Image (tube, rainbow, N blue to C red; front, top):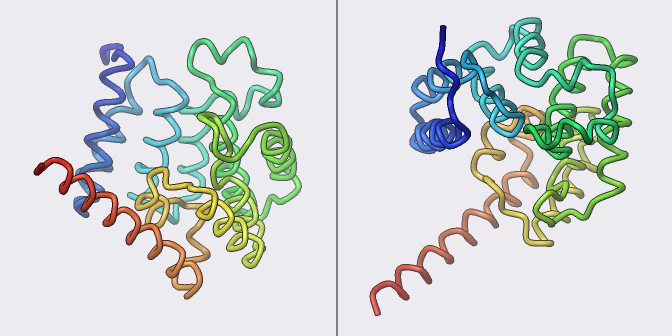
Length: 216
């Protein structure tokens, strides 16, 4: 039986997986994610990230990906809306984590030709976005851009992404640029590339300032 990992262990594994991805060691990251998903004690915050990484192994196997989300994020299929799950938040089910997973799940359902079922999850995410700020600790970040993208609304997705960047969003920007499944339809768009170029430049500027400060 796989040992029950602590929250710290799961977060350490997530950091390891992200480092592997950052250096383009995708297979290593996938293996870390798969191993972590097989352990008990999973929390929704790590579960959604590990599931996003693990799906890189077989991105076209939509049935398997859907099943992996249902196993890692049980809240997706327990019949409750995100705002009905307050009881679960104390044990790892935070509303933003559910909303992130719900966008992924809706995108999968749409890709599989089940837009009617996806509508429930889209409505859930829209409700979440309407109730929280973009940039708070549990804010919606770029979920509006992701939601527009999975529904095929390219211009709306790019507008929302630009609004997020203008507001100061940078959360794991490099991961979202390359590996966020909900933004995949925007890859290659000149506007998309220009927006993330802004973040690349901003990160380089911040690193230069940090190094300058450290050398003094």
